[in-house]
Length: 88
Image 1 (cartoon, rainbow, N blue to C red):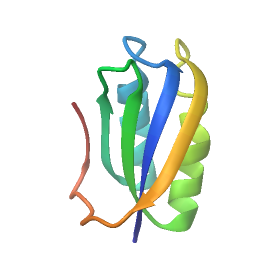
Image 2: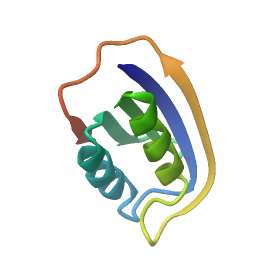
Image 3: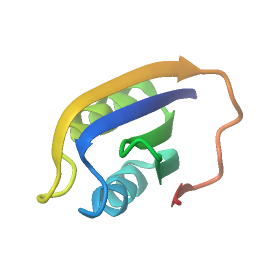
């Protein structure tokens, strides 16, 4: 299992971005979280297989139908994977 931490920029707060990401991650069997940052960005931690992570990373560019993503920056992190996917 591998974990990536991504920072998603654009119009991603107040537009159901975290909820939509949680639903997609859960459907893929990915654990982690999606949280709002004070900068207006969303931080997404995702843990799963390469195939799962690639699918969710591509989805981060879409988000909810109300979001408008301008950037997604991901990097590998070495942490213990959470048991589920949560939002905060």
